Length: 459
Image 1 (cartoon, rainbow, N blue to C red):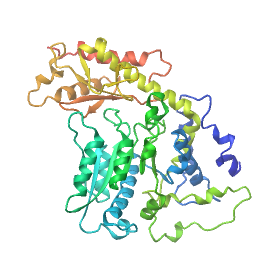
Image 2 (image 1 turned 90 degrees about the vertical axis):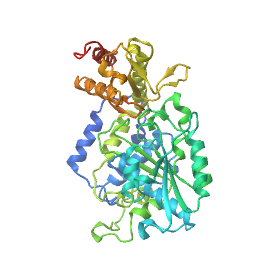
Image 3 (image 1 turned 120 degrees about the vertical axis):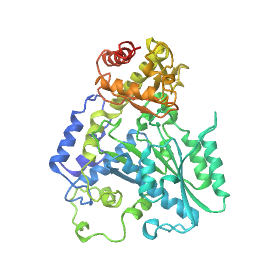
Image 4 (image 1 turned 180 degrees about the vertical axis):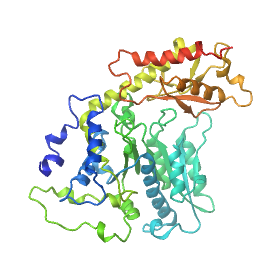
């Protein structure tokens, strides 16, 4: 097959948005198996020897197409081992940008020269993922300089952010700032007003990194159409294909508006001779754009990694816009049906939902595909699940419930971040509720009901 068959914007590639799709994982699993069999090290751009780097470049463009983001928005792009790796890349770019702004030197490189004296970097966040703190620790910003802004009652994050940035601007020392927000907060599924944050960042010269690992594909749904352009406001952006993109693990995605900044940090001044790409003659049908592709060696943390792009490319072709929209709708509806059962159905007597919002129809529902809940503190439930049963550690009520639910082996829940403890259900598996006539939802309700009615420790 020629270059143009594989990688040009041709009918062969535009099946990325097919009219039909297969709601299973077999094609991307096949891509993952082929990745292992061929064992390509996607490191140096060698376009006359392998299409791996060009296919990766095109795959990352197709993800932007899926999200309705113009390809020119993010000129720097890479695949990583996961969202943590992508968040490290985002904070690396933000670090150099913010320090250049703070000292007034557009050419200064922390990667080359280290941190300048007298500068503190603050990472201001709205309910950040733990990987942001890990990234700050790794690149030398420091975990203690990651500040999750605490909002007063009814206060908007953007107002709190502006107040904090103004405080830094007028303080005696020089403070460089990175702002990090989640697009689909992992604990509640909530969304931040990113356009407002973008305006504040522009006024104060802060780098905006968006962690959309959990909620990026919400953009496909009419209900969230008002959010569709918000992730394009980022200076850098994290996605994670092993979540809603329905791809096996180790498939982080990273974008930045500033490719030159990214490569200045990661390329270095010396390339080992054995990694240099020798100039070779091009075949007749060789597309010119392929020569503009950067070596992953210059855009990524690892010097060696798998051909991550292949299973992602297969998933995009397999699912398409229609498939991903159906998957997101199905998972969100499953979460909302379960929350409704806890809100006004039989489950109301035992459980309370903690992450409710007002839906498009005016009814209370959960955002995205997350149900954050806890057992009620009433006489209707076993004492071991009542917060009042644990006077000094009321959060043990939820942790005990989590242990007992997971012990059934019929479903899995995790702890949720909430005062006095909570339980979190994140619905994201491609098989959940698939052509089952509601059997999966019935099974979950049955487990949650039996936990309350048939616990052997019921007093």
